Image (tube, rainbow over all chains, first blue to last red; front, side, top):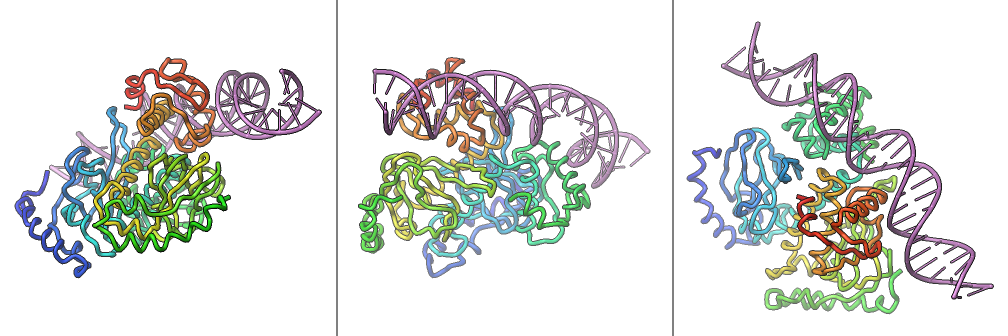
Length: 223
Length: 223
DNA sequence: CGCCCTATTGATCAGCCTCAATGAGAGTGG
DNA sequence: CCACTCTCATTGAGGCTGATCAATAGGGCG
């Protein structure tokens, strides 16, 4: 459910859109400042597959999972979006993915048209964003198609640490989320986690807090 | 190895690029007509991972595989590109994928800068192309992460028939290619093929020529 | 403290992989 | 025209990784 306080603010967008479109090249950071903020609870839907895709989102705080599901419930998480990441640019007129907040999350909502028409060469331009997403998708296809459970989990942990620039990892997502991201089951994720801890490569401070003790070895594992 | 006859023609590009850039919106089909044609033999490399990505390619005839490999040789084919498809827009300054001709192939070479600067809203615009690629990547992640061998092969055959708009399928790629695309082994692909034939869902005219006898059932299989 | 949800661990199973042998088809040359 | 070869596809037997089913443990919260 959407936070009511922000619902009316949603209609500030059209003006912002016009302004950003008019300025174009003169205003490299138009997108950074445009849009309105929305607040989402844990597991709250941001958009669903098939819905018209009017907006693009930028994570201010918290994290988001985008995913696809089969009719029998099998789920594949395509990506976790962390603070600073942009998502929602999937499909053409309608969303091709679903998106949910992993934990409490604040998003900046940007009109799709504003985002697509932005011609600045900044890191947020539509083409640059899509190129990066496609590149990550390629890596993930290699992981899903050709890597072992151990390699997948090592790659996931290393990637997460790199993206959060942090020492100790504080995972916002459950084991089920990780499993659905890595194409494994919750049990295999759990077992592999204990296995990596047993080998001294990681420390399981708690099930959500993890320290990478041997980054070199983890790097070697995922090739 | 590249066909020598076309090598000199390669240097016609700069002029074409300038012309296309100057025309911009006035010339919606600039990309369709710009660029030079190149001919590739079976298994010939078009570009390699890490190489600077100066060009984007459009398949005129034949087909192309783009892929990533692990250091121990495990390969994941990201996509097969058939006549009309555009590829080469992976990575930023350098290619993040490798590309090879599956069989004898003719490509139209387009300057990357020309392609990226094209502001026409045609189906070939950079954003539209990338959106479509990302969308297909999402589908493929679901397939690789969550579907069975039988579902994967059914999806592959249906997708191939739809893309070639044909009745009888004439596969340009080997079983090994299909396996590396679907995240399986050559043996599993072969066995699953015979299994589908045994169930009367397909006809294996030869190992490269396949008739889909029951599209509805195949559709049901891959959900 | 007890409840609920999630994570871990154990035992067994199955789907796909690996290794190995056979078969089919295309191209070559006697 | 038919052996011969080479490559690729198919088929078989057995093994292994990860899935499934089931029980236990931990952790947050009223």
